[in-house]
Length: 167
Image 1 (cartoon, rainbow, N blue to C red):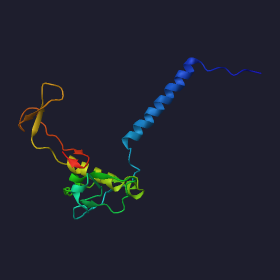
Image 2 (cartoon, helix red, strand yellow; image 1 turned 60 degrees about the horizontal axis):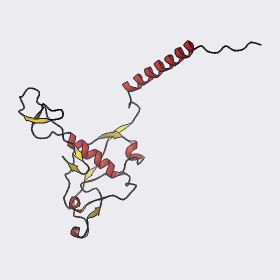
Image 3 (cartoon, helix red, strand yellow; image 1 turned 90 degrees about the horizontal axis):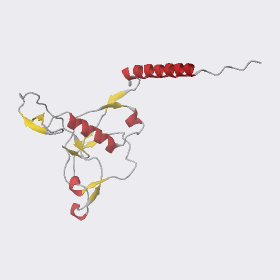
Image 4 (cartoon, helix red, strand yellow; image 1 turned 60 degrees about the vertical axis):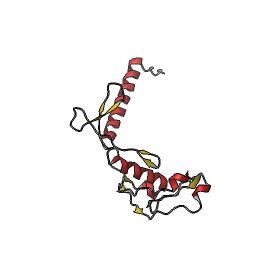
């Protein structure tokens, strides 16, 4: 009866390195086309007329949250109750124009709620535009300085959002 030989240390290293190389090759191939098999579509929504929330705003600090400027047919309800400040509820939000291209399953399977989809819409809407003015880097790390559009190294900054507000 022969006893199977134990793998040598160099054989184990060779096997490990081959497995790592195969894993890297697979990851590189997947990275080239990560979303090819995901069916996408522009998110469809409709503008809706804004109206002040029911009740006296001055009597409350918070109001129940609901989409105020748009309607997303087929979107899931948010799983928990959402509120917003009475001040935010008393101001009509802008009607967005941005239509994100999203995997169809996000709406069809209810993976994102209507308020979450609304946040994606407003983020994209803001990101499509720039802040006013031009900027250049200052001498201190992270410092921005106002610049003319023709200054060497001048650049513009895209808008972003703070939840339920555009900056």
